Image (tube, rainbow, N blue to C red):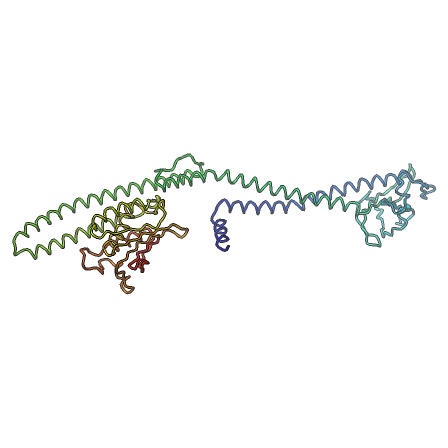
Length: 456
């Protein structure tokens, strides 16, 4: 469970698309959160305007019904709007004189106690919210009247409406607002994901071409990419061309060096054979031939060490089974008297991430040691996992003592003195592994002998 969570966290942290999506999602949520109070304020403004229009119409009904007699207000017993005459109705009406004295109130407002002092200051009209003695909230609309039916008058016509009438409408609007903003956010996130996926299509194409370059199916990157990536692809192409040309020059130089050294060594070998015809020169001839053989091996080793380097951009993969079959076929002929049986403990389709020449040299050295020292059983096992590649060559021979395991990894060190050689086989293996950031371990094999385990 923890490993799965860790892989998911690494994916989120390493993926550019996930990072952009996360950033876009955060911005989208912040935008929605900022939009919410703005929409709520706009709705409240529209709601108050609607309430104001209704209360203004109700105030107009009171004004049309009002009469003045010698400056005194008189109201008819029955008003045009029946709600003013119904007790406990939701439409309330009050009329105040210039001094703020209450001169009339509707029957619907008989049980309502509102503390309000109108401001007869020529302001015209206003809308505000007040509370009654019970703590209930009301919308209050106050309009100043100077003339009633052509006669001079000074009254404040006040109409009220309970704020609870609009609360249900407000709650319903907020529920719908949350719902629609949530759906809009989901839709926006979906569009962002689609847009990012479509935008990253060019990067997927670039990644596909890079995979083809690494696998050796393509030599260069194409120019069928967005203009923002052309500089990157151009730089990669120049790097690929430079690497390819450098490797070619390197190989040609190594070939020239090998040929130039081969001729002098052949001459020395021939001269030593001529000198060996005289009996008195046999000891000197043997010494010369040993040194010539040693020079040949050292030259071969240095050439192999110089050429077996992994490339910077190209990722090689070589079928292990094919390489192993070729090596076993050759070693079976060399050690025909032993009748060595090689067990294969790996997937037949498994591929090792190395150059073919490097794998041949590495596995050839390990197998040659196993063939030489085993009693008759050799086992080659390999596996690929998230942590890398594991390759192990075991035998049923005498094994390697713990105290000697570090020693045999040094160049020129050998525990077996009965067979010819310079003891550089495991050193070559170690050099190859160093070029691939790999490691070599010497352990006790399940077969009873030595186990050389390679980890890439």
